[in-house]
Structures are given as C-alpha cells and as structure tokens.
Length: 434
Image (spheres, rainbow, N blue to C red):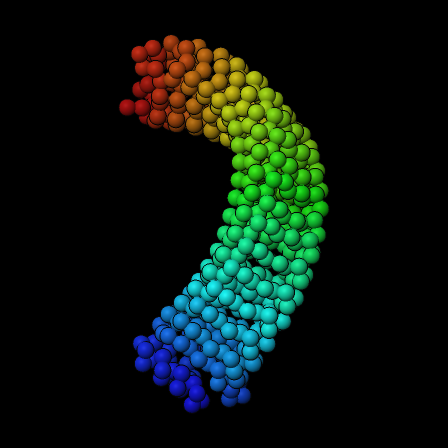
C-alpha cells in the first residue's frame, strides 16, 4: 500500500490526474493485493517505477508522456500496455509471465523479448526498431511490428502465429513456410523481392502490395479469400490452387498472362495496368467485378460471367464486346478501345456507361431505363436514340457526327455536353437543362 501511495504522490506532483483513492475503478484488488492498474490518459510524466508491486498482473499506462517504465520486480505481470508514450527503452526481461505487450508509438530502438516465452501478443509498431528477435516466443499468436526500421524478420519458431503485420519496414525477404496457422499477413510497403508462402496453408488474407516481388506462388494456399499484390514487379502470379479466393487485386504489375482458372470462387478481379494480351475468365462464373483496363488485349469474353455488375475494360484494343448474357451489369467503362458498335440493350440495370474515344457508329441503348450517366464523346455517331433512357441525368456526346438530339423523354437530364454549333436539341424544355 505504501509503495502505491508513493508512486501516486510522485506522479501527482508532476501534474498527473491519477486517483489517490485506491478503491477507485483505476485499481483492482484480489485478496488485498493490487493486481490491476488502469492509468491510460492520466498525464503520467517522466519515469514510472512499479517494481515493488509484486502481485501486479495488468498495467495500462498508455497515452501518456512517460520516458521510462520500470517493471523489474513484477514477476507476475501478464499484460503491459504502454503505447503512445516517449519510451526509448523497455526492459521486460524480469517479467516471465508476460502474455501481451503493447508498446506502440514510442521511440524504441531496441526491444528484448527473449525472456518472455509465454508471450501471446506483441504489438510494437511505430517505433525505431532495426531488429526484433522472437526466436524464443514459440507461443506467439499475434505480431504487429509495422512502421519500424526492420531489414529482416525471422518467424520460423512462431508456428502458432495467426496474425502478422510487418508493413512499412525495409524487409527484402519473408519466409512463412514454418507458419501453417497464419491467417492474415500484412506486409505492404517493404522492399520484398521474395515471399515464401507454400507452407502457410492456413492463410486467408494477404496484403503484399507496393514491394518488389517478381513472382508470387499461391497455388498451395487453398484457404485464401483475399489477395492484394498490386504495385509490385510481378511477371508471374499463380493462383490456380487458391480455390477459396474471392478477391484478387494484382493491378500495376508487369503481367503478360494471368491464369485464374483454378480460382472458381473469384468474385472481384482487379488486374488493370498490366501487360496482358489476353484474359480468360470463362470459369470464373461468380465474378461480379472485373477491372482490366490499361492492358493490351484485343478480345474479352464475359459471356459466362452472368453475375457481372461492374466491368472496366477501358484502354485496350477491343474491336467488339458482347454483353448479351450480363443482365446484372450496372457499370460499364469501355472507353479508349476500337469498338465500332456497342449493344447494351440486354443490360436493363446499367446505370453508368463510358464508351467515349472509340469508333462507334452504332450505340443501342434500348431497354436501359436505369441509365443515368452516359459519356459517348469522340466517336462517329450520326444518330443517338435516348428515348427509353428516362432517368438519364448526365450526357456527354460531343465530337460525334450528330446533327440533332431528341431529349423530349429525358425529364431528369440536367447536364449535357454537345457540339452546340452543329447539333439541334429537340425537347429541351422537358428536361432540367437551363
């Protein structure tokens, strides 16, 4: 009791708001022994020395202005939360019972957890750590060490690991073959040139974008549902064994081929800004979203993708696009291709259509009662029938061969861009145009 009163008095003299009533909810007692202290956001200052509290199991001193925490005499300490302080060092070598350690957002350059074999959770992001040795922490389930200065990370002894966040470091390689229980991996914004995942059979989510990976093999990760691997240098991506995969973002790489045939559960595919000269999605029958713009293919067959609602295939070399089987299509971006005709009359849910900068001389919009946004500028249209598009709000049709445009039925039309000197507008008074 006297030790605690001394600690409280010392902190209150420094301006802390810690309560001096030991029956307050900031303190928990068991059989007359103090076991828990909650001093989060209490304006703690300088050093906090709790080494005399030998029964203490839980301490939360996060979100203060501490420069040092001394817990050397707390052999029973199980949980230490000291995040968001100004700690430059932290010694937990005499806390063998420690299960969870949260020391996020400090100024730590060194952290030794080799004497904490029972550690279950370690969260040390937003520090200045250049090395982290977890070889003795075989029970570790969650490790968060993002936004440090790590150049290497060995997790081979942490076979129970389920969550790993090591993004925004300087890692060049990461081997997870000894982590079969790993479910979620977050390692974007490093300098990874290799990522070994064949032994991580339990993986469900991977985020490894913004690295330097040249290849990525996910064929052994059958439980994967979500993959972000964009903005790498990928020339090879194997997802054939990823039978549970529903979301794949591999945009902004250097892929010339992409075989997603084994990913039967795939619902969202983002592969834009690559070098693909073909794309086969015929077996991906659950696909609802396909973003494949800025590639180099001439053909795109979506006839088997009957659930497709969002298609972006702009900036390719498409000369034809058949959409007869895509009755759920809601958004279509097919601009900057080589299309001469486009028939969207079988797409009654279509709300947005961008087909500008093609070679269109025919555009069939019949039956598209839901269409609200249409941009068909920079084509060769001499006629444009929008009589059935009664919800049309925005229309851009300039730089075509139109001589007249009938908007009599387009009572919702409020924005119109056209060649005002060449095109006569019929029924303008029926619209919201000024």
